[in-house]
Length: 243
Ligand SMILES: [Zn+2]
Image (cartoon, rainbow, N blue to C red):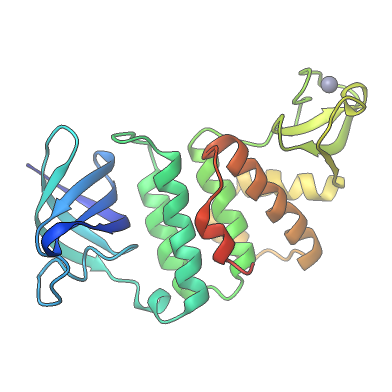
C-alpha cells in the first residue's frame, strides 16, 4: 500500500455504485484506482473522488488497477466548481494530462505545477491567458516545446522566418517555407512571448500584458500543436471551451 498526494483527473461509473478514477499522483505518476461505493452521496469517498479534487490517497497497488483504501481531502476547489467556464477549463486541464501521460509515467515537477495551477485557476479572471500559459508550461515539462531557434524542417539556424508549422512543431527557415504546407504567419513579438512563457514562472506570467488578438493566435496554434504532438488525437473538452 502507498500513501500519496493525488489529483483526480477523471471519474468513470462502473457497476454497483462504484467508480474508477484516474489519478495524477505525486509519487507514482498517473494511475487508475477502483473505488467502492463512491456514487453513494453518503460515502466517505464521494467528494474526494470528484475530478480535480486533491487529496492524500492511500492505495493498494495492483498491476493494472489500484484500489482506494482511504482518502483525506486537501483541496476541493470550490471556486472552480461554482463557475461553469472554470469547470470546463479544469476538465480540459485534466483531460490533457490523462491523454498525454502513460500509466505509471512520473514526470519530475509535474504534480506541483498542476496543483499550483488548479489553485491559481480559482482566482484568475483571464481564462484564455491562463489556459495558454498552462498549456505551454505543462507540455514543456513533458518534453514538448515548440521549436523556436532552429528550423523545424531542416535544422538550420540561419535565415529563420517567423512562420510556424504545426506539423513540424515550430519555426521554419526561408528555404523550407516554400515546401511547408501548414505554415502560419507570426511576428517576432509572438515568438518572444512563447519563449518568455517557457522561461518564466507561472506566477510571473499571469501578470503580463498581452493583446487579445495576439493571445488568440498563439492559443489556437498551441491547441493544434498539442493535438498533433502531445495527445495525438482531438481533445473532447476543448470543444466546450469558449476561449
Ligand atoms: Zn529549413
